Amino acid sequence: MSRVGKKPITIPTGVTVAINDTELEVKGPKGTLKTPIPAGVSFKQEDGSLVAERAGDKNAAVHGLARALANNAVVGVTEGFKKDMDVVGVGYKADVQGKKIVFALGYSHPIEYVLPDGIEAKAERIGTKTTINQYQTTLTLSGIDKQMLGQVAAELNRLRKPDAYKGKGVRYADKIYRLKAGKTGK
Image 1 (spheres, rainbow, N blue to C red):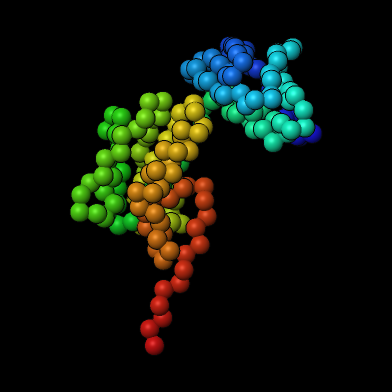
Image 2 (cartoon, one colour):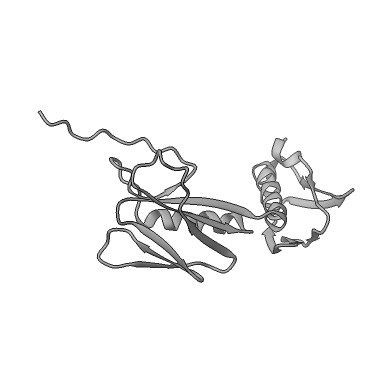
């Protein structure tokens, strides 16, 4: 049995869950999310909680996945998700202008990244990051869809990957980067 799949999901007050054959629709104070239900897995509501059940052992692989996706939808519509990205490097900067982020990342032109619907960004300089050399800005991405938030963060990271020697680029704030030592002149 899947340990993740067996855990019930508590549904907070103000959240409604509609169970269809192929998808789960979760409505909450922050919005509405739809999550697909894999074949062989079913959901049922009992006593203010949501329980995932599988038809047989052939569906064991997707049992925990279906429960995790449903839990992410419930957490997303109640609390939302947040991801921080650091812009590091001399002359590198990020500026949020409405629904787009304008980057200066050492290329010959500025890069404009248009945010998808449901994702918001905020750029600020956090003074406590003095341990990072050439630290410029922290981008805080937020939204209710965890998958879309992770995809946007990956695309921003791909604009200028952190280099191995100084760590310059668009970096994940919670990731520890090990830098290589430079050449020694003899």
